[in-house]
Image 1 (cartoon, rainbow, N blue to C red):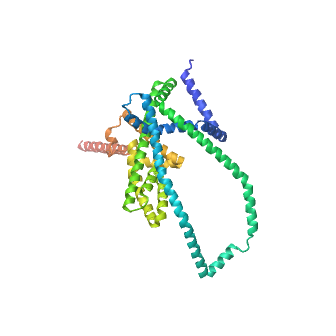
Image 2: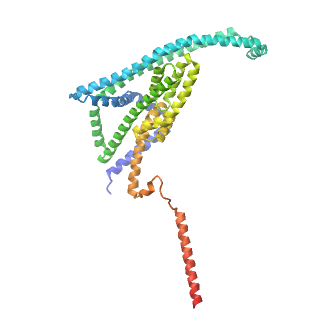
Image 3: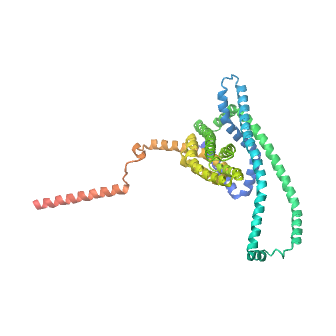
Amino acid sequence: MRIDKSVIKKLFVLIACCILFGWLVLDTARATVVFRAVWNLFSPFVIGAGIAFVFNVPMRAIERQLADIRKAGFRRVLSIVLTILCLVLVIMFVFELLIPQIRLTVASLSQTIPVFIEGLAAKLMVLMQDHPEMRSWIQETLKLESLDWSGIFTETLGFLSNQMSTVMGGAVSVIGSVTGAIINGVVSVAFAIYCLSRKEILARQGRRLLYSLVSEKHADEVIRVLRLTNSTFSNFISGQCLEACILGCLFAVAMAIFKMPYISLVSVVIAVTALIPVVGAFVGCILGAFFILVNNPIQALTFVIMFLIIQQLENNLIYPRVVGTSIGLPGMWVLVAVTVGGDLMGVGGMLLMIPLTSVIYALLREFTDKRLAERGIPAEKLQNQPPELESRYSRTKQRKERQRLQKMKEKFLQMQNQKNK
């Protein structure tokens, strides 16, 4: 009996997968520790690859504009520098708008809040004087006179001294985490720049490795899916940026109509925070209402109402059509993807789930078309309003009814023949 090597290889892979799955289920704690260690080791490179993918979208547009430069190496370096420079300028522009306005708002609040507290305290004193029974009830309930304030103060100092070592240890841990994050950020950016400068070489090396490991048919399918994923994610990034610009312009126009302050600041904040799908604009709403509240509380309330109206318009009409059209995903499934991704992985899940759902939607559509063609389903049954289809029960019932009528007809003919005889 001859043993097929491919069968042995498949059995080996299946057994290895079963062992790995069993280990993950039975020893979850150790598997989590191993996963975190592996992630901490490779996270700078994964994040760098993600940064390179995002930067590649504007870099391709810039590189197309520099097509007249004949030296490919110089054109690539110049496009990378211009891409990073544009992103840095956008970030500096946003912070240049935000930081001075935040300082003014905090300074104004630091002046208005004490006045508000003093006025509130004065009103409470007047209320206590006008209602002595309320003052006596509060004193009896809280028992302020019987409290040992010196003992409370001593215990508080003892608690703070005991917790000082914990606080210092936590501070050292935070400093170490921040330092590690900065180092990982530098490594990620450096790796992203390297990926952008050598993306064609990396793609060719990946294809060579793929064709060397699997069959040509499966490798072609994997490359096709990866190209579809790349196109979908790139279109999603472009559509998300376009949607954020549209939302910022809508708020600028609406705030100008209602003559609200800080039009440029609030519209830029909302446009930046709207890069997070669907829910990001709510952060911009909170910041915008906070800025306007200092000058006019009534206008802040009007701004919140205006935000809710524009947000409904954006969620149900603009976002599904702009982002959904750019990635080939219907608006209904965009909303489903945002909801599911947010519940599973938060903000990152929202950003990831929409293009991932688009890829799955496109692959499922191709699979469905292929299966329908193979099974030879009539086209009229796949229309928006297909013809009424008879069920098997109704067909069986009609056949039995015809047989019954046929038997009755034959019996009647037999009776007529007997009478004639």
